[in-house]
Length: 297
Image (cartoon, rainbow, N blue to C red; front, side, top):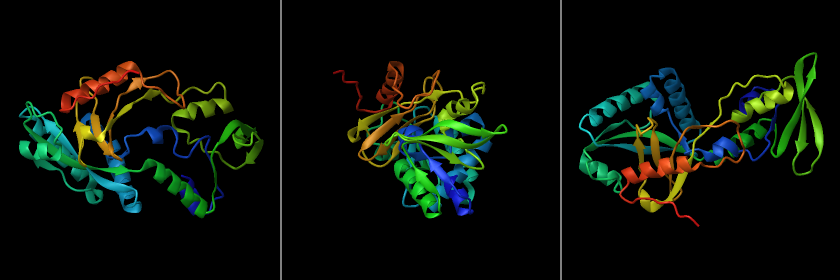
């Protein structure tokens, strides 16, 4: 948003309370994807929007986004045709912005792609492609681009109050976390782009503002690379609670997740619940030949 506004000639100040890539961005599965789970839910509009965003980002930032192959291992005869057709629809929805096309894999090809997959009962597999990206580098590059376009960007600078005139927000009072100094920033408009913390800032300006965000958290477990060697990810389309589970190679590690647990409030440093860890570990053990286990110190 800051890049877009600055490139159009607007005077822009981008203010972040923490690191530019902290918060939700730093805790993602490092994927820019079209939302396979939304396709299963029938939310075609959201899938189309996500696929177009994926394609544009891959074209605009090829140094940050790369093709990631995903394999869906199937353990029932009907799963291959069912998911295979779904992935072809996924390909078609992406249009000219698609990555490599999806396809069917034999049992042998599936095990070659993901040698650590559980072989017992394995029938075959479906392969499709999504994007993997470096979220931290993307955030920094966007901030750099905004600055190149004339924006003023700063982090570790928190909004502590909104300035109003005749009922309209006309600026913000900010606190420099490092220097401890406070100052006012006057502007014609303020954009609240704080993600899960959007209600916190809204209530700074209006204590009676009704919440607009239902808070939930999702966790990932990071495993050594030996649990999923190679460069192919695993997608489990339906776990015991109906969610999608991913195991994704990332910087000589494997990211496995995610959960979806309602929470009362958003916190900057969320902590995984025991039941969330157990859920991810249980499914990782179910689909991998090496069974990860928690080590208690």
